Length: 112
Image (cartoon, rainbow, N blue to C red; front, side):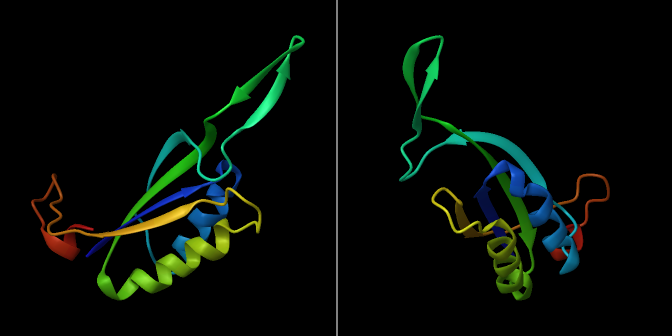
């Protein structure tokens, strides 16, 4: 099993969620996040004073999927989250050794 973590722009969340649903992935965790990469934030003017906004609003999505679904899931996230502009985000993939459903005690892919 694999864990996919994607950092995306907040307004792309619904499109990514729909794209993952279309390929058959159901479980999804969404966290509000702030951060920056190459963008390095931007400056804003507030009441006549200029200040730097280092941390930009982002959304972090976490999905656990079977190994055979990985490429389809990554492609779905990439296609749905892409705007073609700087700051579109990143996708991280890592191995998951075990998943346990708390309610039933199911383990492995059955628990996902």
